[in-house]
Each structure stands twice: as C-alpha cells, then as structure tokens.
Length: 157
Image (cartoon, rainbow, N blue to C red; front, side, top):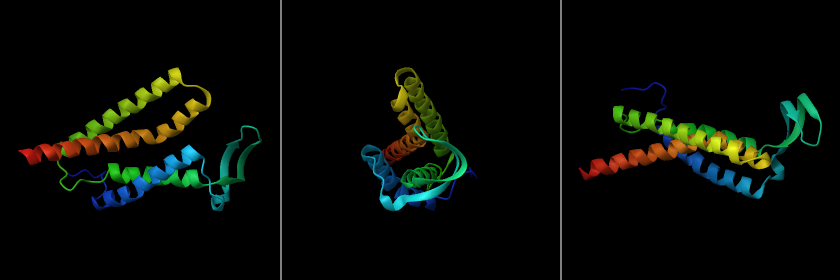
C-alpha cells in the first residue's frame, strides 16, 4: 500500500540528523535561558503584547531568534522522522503508524488536561509552550518503539 502523504525513506536520516541535536540544544536553551548575542536581530512582528511594555501591531521589533530557529527545526525534522516511509512500508507498519499517532494524541491531551487542573501562571504557560512539540515527540517514540519491537519479534521467528 502506497501512502502518498509519506516522505521518501531517505528523509528519515536527515530528520534524525537534525532532530536529535536540535532537541538537545532546545532543552539546554530552556534550562539555562541561553540566548547568544549574535542572534539578536530586528524581526517583523504581526502583533506583540509585551508584559511590562507596549502593544504593537505590524511593526519591527528587536528579538533573539534562537527559540524560533530551534522550534522550526524541531518541527520540520520531527515531521521528517515521523512521516518518512519505512524501508519496508506495508499495511502493518501503516497500522502501527496510525495507532501510534492516536496513542500520542491521547497522551498529549491527557497531560494537557492535567495541566489545566493542576498548573497555573508561568508553569502552565511553559507546559503549553512545550506541548507544541510533545505530540510529535510522543508519536516518534512510540512508533519507533513499536517498529523495533516488531522487527525483534520477526527476527525471533
């Protein structure tokens, strides 16, 4: 069965090559509030509502773009990892892919529901920010775990 929405298999390697170091740098950036000076630049903003500042619409602002670069790279590389065809893509792999996506969605929204009930203020905001990436991360982890488990069981037979 050919799924036209999947990328060719060769993109999976490129995805992993970008995804792993970008995730590590992303976690480091969040943990240490790392923001290198050379990435401070002026960017176009559609709307900015600063906490202790002014509100601007359609203006140019000063910003460190490291978070934007990392977010874009994590999303693009995660999509390449998660939605690239396997070497032997068949109906069973397609079922594992669908099951993993459903499982990741349930887990992602369960965490979000718990955050709505138990977390507040800046902590809730951090969970919401990280929640942008967790669906893709949960999917990648579960899908690869299930495919690896299938490969091991086929090798044992």
